Image (cartoon, rainbow, N blue to C red; front, side, top):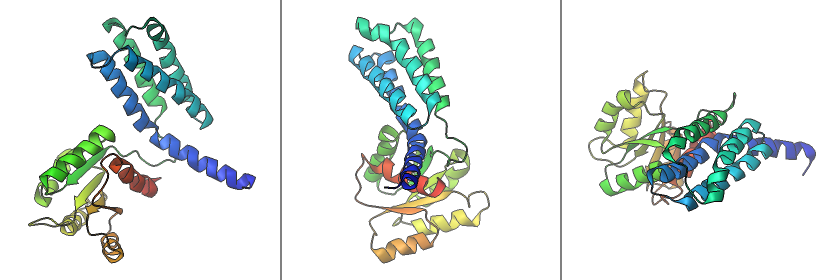
Length: 241
């Protein structure tokens, strides 16, 4: 690989890393929540410190020194508690919370990078699938999700919820997915909301038809709940990065 090619590859990898940093921080916040609520233990605290240590080193390599400094500060705060095999007392929770907040601020997308995906409106008439998708995106992916069982309900929820992206089933009674997309595009207030179809209709012709309607992408059913958020973000980042 030539030096120019390597540079381009590294810049692309760095941009992708920085774009995904906020999702990593969500995992750290969950570890800390386990510690503060009593759901975790000293072992959870050790896991948190190790994650911070790894984050500090990787961020430095990937060109995010501010993240490195913030992660090291949080790691140093935890060192005496990890060494003593105890969790920080309640009096110290606010101080560490402030360090995590500083870490989050340091990981905000840089100028020129696409906006981070945070809010998804899910439209799926099958109750079981709706529950699985919502849990997968929220619990695994760290996204904020509003779930609707029909196109009518989804259109009514748009103004209040304000999603960045609609994850939309194709086959639904009364109003199918393509019709919902058409309604979105007809209003200036919702025309800019992106749509990704989640569907079992995945022949090349069907996917081309859905993209032709203006969808950002298509995710096939069945899907892996553990990686669904990655598929959604990959489509979002590919268009917005």
